[in-house]
Amino acid sequence: MTSDNKDRLGSKLHDVEAAREDQWARQRDADLLEKMRERMSKTACPHCKQFLVAKSEAGVPLHVCPAGHGAWIDAPALKAVLKEQK
Image (cartoon, rainbow, N blue to C red; front, side):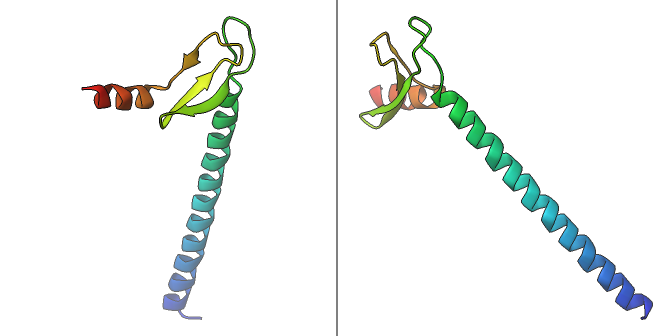
């Protein structure tokens, strides 16, 4: 095997290893995002401690207390609503 072939083989192996690392990182990011979404959907009402329910009103995503103690909206959705009101 010539030196040039070894260099090409080493380069290909490096590319494969980098692709596997990228794939692992993407999967890890996806898993972390899913855990964050799950945790957010299980946020409790500070008044009655019941889990909030995800709901959408007029296209605005909310988290609502099932006992009617309030609703919570995230910052990007709030900014969009306020921008529409101007």
